[in-house]
Length: 110
Image (cartoon, rainbow, N blue to C red; front, side, top):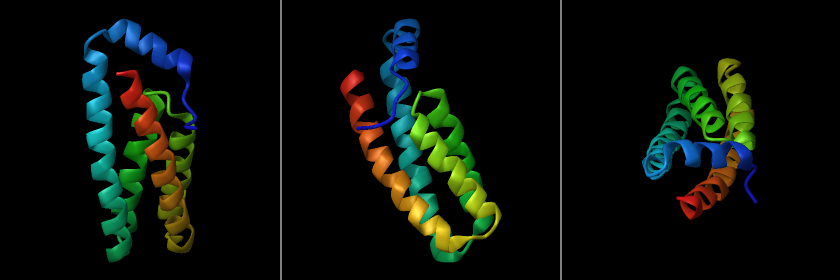
């Protein structure tokens, strides 16, 4: 099960009403693109692109209450900053697994 701050999500859903679905769709679309960047960055050993994508996912995950995804993204950001690609490759897999759980949970809520 995804690590989601359910109180935060309930508050967001209450405040945003119908726009909550747009928020979820935007988060999913942006995250799909960031994961593509993770993979292409690894292929090109582009630590800066990887770091920037991880940083973006860290923030957007935090904003939507996906706490574990945000933490994993922060760890990936650090690995990219240190050019620790051997660590980043495992973190990307962890991010992808957690994202699939988060995505399913969010789509259920919208």
